[in-house]
Image (cartoon, rainbow, N blue to C red):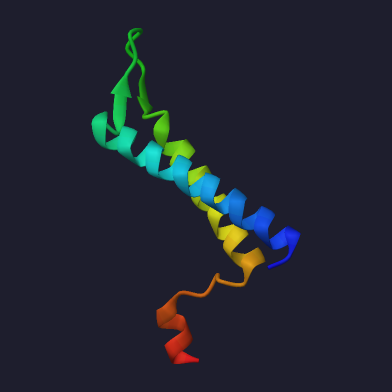
Length: 75
């Protein structure tokens, strides 16, 4: 694997770890929260999860593993 490939894989692993951590936090808190001032907002962990999933998809594409196994069997 090239130096670039190792860097992309390391970045993927970091994004994956953050995604797992954020998902654990989402499970611990309600998806929708009420702030002390009475406003309703989504859990601050949801955007973290979504961003990490986006990054993971980009890194998978860079590594050439963006196709799910089901798609491979159909082609």
